[in-house]
Length: 325
Length: 303
Image: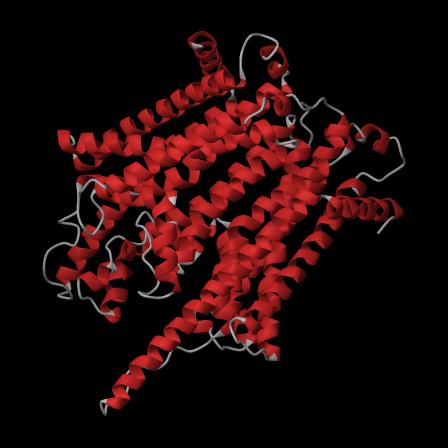
């Protein structure tokens, strides 16, 4: 890291950590993540208490419970929290990425900055490094909030494997949030109008995070009828697979649509590590990685592409070579 | 009073017509309404083919599960697009409207004339609501045309009335979000805070509020059918009883399901949902009248 990059990095990090409104929004995200976890824990405990009551009533009448008690799988309770990071996290990431350039444009400090002898990529590299550390700090805070809530409210006990899975899913969250910050940084550098950069970033968020996965999900034939299409036709799983084999093209198109969204890759990777998808629940990390590495690879490719976009556009020619509004 | 209010409303419409981003958002919303029809058509076609295949393989018997489907069920996804794109667009229109006046110095000029803050807010409200109504009317026409294209038959007068009522309901749902954006646009010192704060409120209203009573996962709330309470007699059922009546997203989904005919109870009119949404919309306008101050609007906008 050159001296210029280091100087920009420390200056930007200090600025970001001093921005009260941004920190308040991060605190709001942490609160929503914790609240979602508390709701999941309460729901689990309610299910367990209902089961115990049912088993007790059966035992008193001389019977035995046929169903198994609900199993506490602590990491599965994080599903809602991860979904909040998936939905709200990018909004904060966009604001951080936008703000780090917008303030310079607004204050007119860029001309002064580029009058100094700095490399072509130093500005973008310093800003990206500051954003990377900022998100690492926020992710560590979220890790602490999740682990504490899981332990004290959910009654969860942690093993080394559980901690590793939690850390891996939050590492995916870091890559996902950095993707959005780098994208917003690049868009702000490349845009003539500051307001337009922010709005285009929000439109990208709307399309990628909310619309694409929603469209793919609603095109699932099984979601078209309340209670499920196949259940309503009394078709069992083996026949369901045989029937759906005739609709390979439709299913591929639906899946391809979902896969264009980076949010879906973040969701798939983190849900696999957390065991939200039942086939990965309680499985070793190596097994999950072997099955889902493509999602992590695509997430990292997205991050590299957005970082390259920011590095390409965040230069002297774009920032001071033309007027901005 | 009528003079300045109407002048401001007309000016608002003129500005909106030249605002490329507002037009882009409206285009996205209308595009999604069309896509909603396409999704309805693709799903309908696939489900019917799946049913045919199941019959051929002898795996199913009985009627097609879609045989009892109401004609307007085809556009059920528009409910979600209104909650997602419609509400966010309404917020952006509100924020942009106030921010434009502040950044362009219109506010200083305007309040040097005999115009009160309430007249300004009322004029802006009229202009923005007219714009939203135009977009929703276009969406209604598109939906009607999509239903005609997919079904190969015109909607009956009753269904056409229900479709019009649905877009009227959508307008009632969007008013408070538009006012929320306008209030924050008029009062925030930074443009980013003006955009972020109402988006955060939107997240709380659309995701967190329903979740407190249902324990549903946030992504599963992106479903046109209102979520049900987690379990009876529990903490969630209590929250559901208290919070769901005032949850705008749940009220909108409930009333829409009744109008479009995809609720378990079939087609019906939810008076309570309509009344609640009308009260929330009126509250949004009153809040704008009470909270917006010309002095605050005159303060410079920072990044």
